[in-house]
Image 1 (cartoon, rainbow over the protein chains, first blue to last red):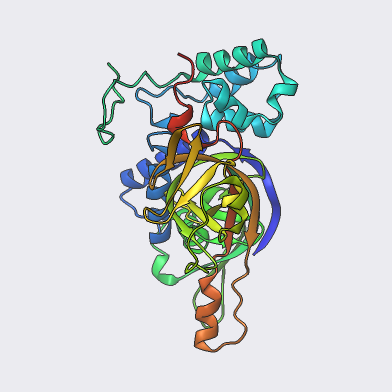
Image 2: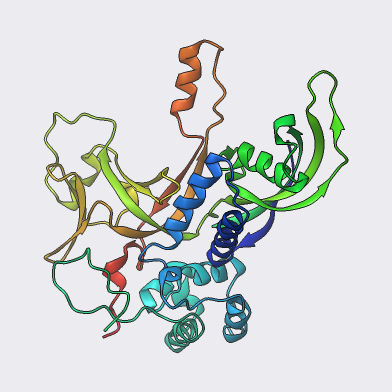
Length: 147
Length: 219
């Protein structure tokens, strides 16, 4: 084995998710199974990407293949680095504290209005979880349908 | 969180796999070799992304194996330093035990007297993520009965419960080449015990830690 290029590209979670879903579907159509280690990892990874806190779990989906281009266009006025853009795609920060977790030195780099606008832009392009129905104690119940 | 890595390798296709299309046989061989495995300083390999090039197949003497030189790209899990990722708390464990001494009272001053406690965070597919107690917000304390950490803000107690989804930021990575010291069986076993790739994280920033703490701050 020889590594030709250790980091040829960065992928967003959505791209990986789409790739794995397509792979799972193709394998099923061709009635073939991948090696056991792949099948296990794919199942666990899809489970991770679909977990409750992950924006990819939202139904109907709010991400599509154009999301990256749209987001870049919407946030063009701001100097956001590539790595930070990937995090915004992956984590979808829809409030200021969450944005703070993905942008380094946010308070120095952006004014309060700019922060608000970035958050608004993220919500415009990538959507947002519907507000959870009020229920006490019953955390097991999923509330993805909203109400 | 994910990258593409370009790799060149030799794939050997066994006669039993000749009924498969070459492309399928090559992909299966690559995935069998790499999927769910760690390459040192590269990351955790997920699967083949695309096949860039393949040579003619050459049949080896004596074995009947078809040898194909290939170049391909792999999807690899390798969060970069400073990246914020999602995980779940799997356990909170006191390490390096002097645990007969009673835990220090929960004041900021005695904080350093405590044993180095770790939060272990996992994702569904990757389990080696650790957050040191030093990387939790300052007024955190460990509850030895419940084996969990608590963040005390004013008089509110917020719990780092098990299975709770959390956000953490990657600050470091630790690589361990699992090469055994000798060929003895126990040396081989010993070398495998240390994980080949683990991640150190922090939760000491607004927006990090248990996700629901930060969910509804607008209204």
